[in-house]
Length: 103
Image (cartoon, rainbow, N blue to C red; front, side, top):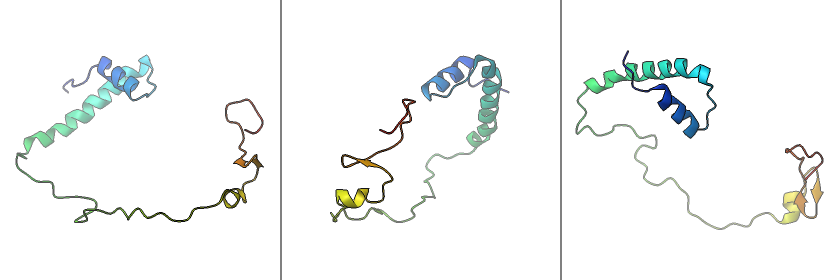
C-alpha cells in the first residue's frame, strides 16, 4: 500500500477539523486513511476529460427558493405564551454552564 498521508498530515488534518486524535491513534488512523485512498485510486483509470456531470439532486430546477414575501409574525406575547418560564419579556432557560439556576 502506498503512503499518501503521513502521521503528521493526519495530525494536521485532525487539528484543522478539530477532531481529537491521540498520538496512540495516529498510526492506525493513518493506515486506514491511506487504505481508503488506495482503494479509490481505481477511479484514476477512467478517461474523464470532457465528460459532463450527469446527476444533479434538484434535476432541471434552476431556482427552488420561494419569493421573499414579508408576512405578519408573532407578537412577543404570542411567542412567550407557551414558554415554561418567562422573565422580563424573555424566555427563561436553565443554565448550561454550571452556574446553576435559570438564565
